[in-house]
Image 1 (cartoon, rainbow, N blue to C red):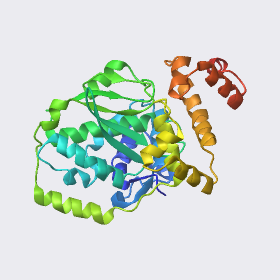
Image 2 (image 1 turned 180 degrees about the vertical axis):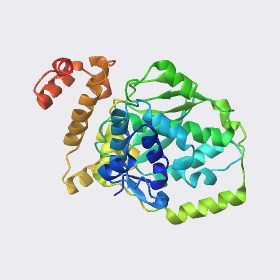
Image 3 (image 1 turned 120 degrees about the vertical axis):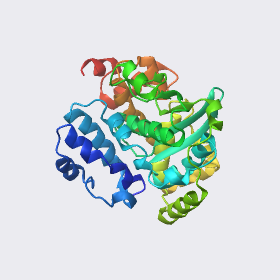
Length: 330
């Protein structure tokens, strides 16, 4: 079970469900998640049912901002001891330290700290094969990011922007109020943009003894979390398709191996690269078409097609109808 998160993420979910009029025990049984277990922190929680739980709660409880409400209510709880392990002199140092710890303890997510021409970016990649609709999960992740920043530096750091892979679930001004910055939707991925000048801002806590204890603890509870090879390929395909560079050469470069080595590993596992890409495109085509804000040309581009006609032909092969007819029927 490689695509997991740690049990700290479950804190407060039962309380929010009950507060909104639901019965947390029923959801606990339905999704087989220990929502009421007090010592669940060190447990490995499969991410797939968690993603589905957040979506179902939002729908059942008529709460379109369920993920955001949950993240804001949880504060820094979901990252567990990482909050103490990333104590540093500046916000930039703390952020850089957080990424490897998050990837180590929550391997269902891959975080990447990027330097862009406009400023630093924290890019998220969900490493759950075929995650399906994950809108609440994305919004929950970025709400937690916001709360962790407030813990580290108070209100002295602001987001330069946030972006989501899905369409807005609520009015744009709601998101602007929550995150305090411009928010972009239907981007094919999700993450946070920061101001470069904020990286040097001092943090509120820098206790070296506490940090050492937390880092030692993280090292003891961390487990080798190697994703299965097919899961790795699925994650890289989903990452590179919107960038228009989903080729074996690009994935081999990301893995620091030769194309020949990557091809050999695919053959050993009985996998065909073109089939993996086709499967991801098929699933995401339906998800993107459900976002009526996206034009057909945008959907095609997010799926890595240069020509819209190529997307239309592929879609008809998958679903037996055209993309426009499929969208009209729903």
